[in-house]
Length: 111
Length: 115
Image (cartoon, each protein chain N blue to C red):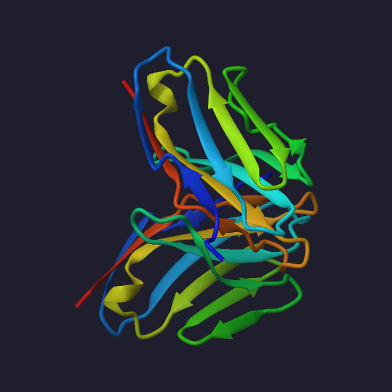
């Protein structure tokens, strides 16, 4: 019940295109949903996050869409750039102050 | 701030040897997390400290793994004896009480190879 399922595992997008990564969860006790971005050789870094009482949050080219009834949320990267090439992790936060991470999506944006 | 500092960055050791990974959290952060990252299992939380006290160690794989946080600025993760299946990247992350939920700051990781 603590799992967060993420898809796809890998994604190739042309420069300027839209990258979409999806996540689903089961535990309704999760209370915050962050996305992390990880470049090769680096630790993950917080990218954007959303509360479960909000359906959408946008920061620049990055948007989270959240569907509470379906227990799904997704990351959209508009106008994808080669510099966005990285591994993206969705996560879910519980009241115990811990994060459960999805399996990760390796994004490659082709010039 | 220098961010979360981990050492060593790379460690190669032989099976059966003891391995100690070190972490210095961001000053003022009072929560510290140890994660393990592998291709097969992704990012797994091993143990979580709050104010230097272990809160949840349910992710620690077995008794070969132990973690300590003797003070607010230092933590260690020890594997004794090490096995090839322990090969992974180990991350330390820290968090401030005033940070938003889910906001953790990760170190650069230690890549461990056990031969």
